[in-house]
Length: 539
Image 1: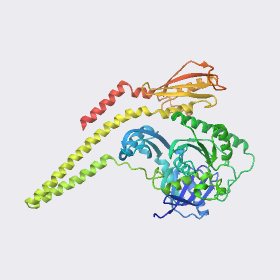
Image 2: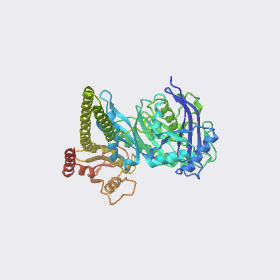
Image 3: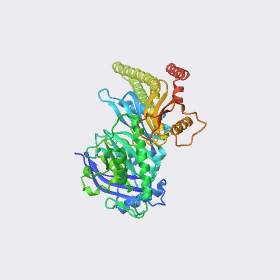
Image 4: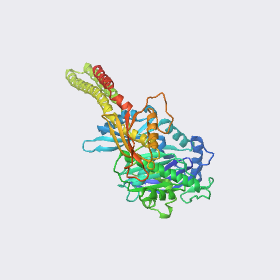
């Protein structure tokens, strides 16, 4: 039986530092201590030295003397994408994922730490066809390390907060196989996730300012809950309204990628003080069973501590993930290692060269019989060299296949465009509703059928898309030096026949994706073919 070990898990946002001490191992996690400490308003959480001092003070106040720590990266500091792949051997996934990540990241792949989770695999053939890619800039990880160092801590693992929340949901009673919308409310950033069957199906961060109730100079811990005074109701109501809008927008974006899905439960976590009212508002708006995050039953502790631990979903997920080997699959500090084929070739060549030299020296000093034995060894060396040549040829074939995969993969860019459309919608769910959406790779187009309260809202939607530039987003300034992202065509506006109260008409919008059209142009296809032929001749 493996011995259980004590671990320290750490998580923070703009207002609060959360510390959790637990014993993990043998598939179990026992909570020993959990504390939340309010960050003083004058402390800049982007300053590692200042934040590290707050963490060190919190640890000293609660007499926590651990030095190794498990931390996480929030959703807004990471890039997450689902990567469809052709059937790929499991052993080759790190190479292939890194190759495909070049097209998904908004920054050079050399500047990022990458890890991934296999989503779809064939166990019999030992191949995978879809992974969840997670990437974090190295400078972000550097600031996390500096913060921990300033607190006298040493990171042992750096996970991903949405994935830690996924692990917490999996441990709630009856939720492991349900499709759950999980809303983790923070003072400046709320993470909205959809989890299903132990997988992260959708994740998004929403920037909504939430008033955190309570006195900034008082402590929050697993034994103390800070409550607020009066005068905040207008701010609270506005924040709840904005959060409901962001949740609805997230659901629309998710359903655009997976049609006809049904959300079974909504769970609200966080410790800002608005979670109860938000849960009631979401249950009314979505007509779904909505609960507050309560980990007391799986932790085996008294139920009256559920509210105290409502903001600890991420650190609890980190601890639970450490209790079972392989459960916490993402680790940016120790990602799944990419073994480059060139390193393998050089290592084999060095070993074979040393064997050949030893065979030649031995043959000169030994008798005829010994010479014949060494000659046999030399034959083995030559056979090994032929195997090495085959490895080189395999490398050439892999490069050619990668180019073919690149062409195949270029048709799988629609998720990014669906996200852009959802962000461009004016008043989603209230003033404009997408009735159907069709992505056509053969014509490099997206056809959107929608209804709206009036044609001006449709015109606003079309104008935003027509002005978008490559690499830009609807709610950000556009770089006019970059080419346009779409060629937009709007169909006729048809009054009535919407079957939805408050919506006056319908229309159709056709988007031509410019870079996809260029990728499939005859000139681009011929250029890629010529490059593959040149590479084949060089080898």
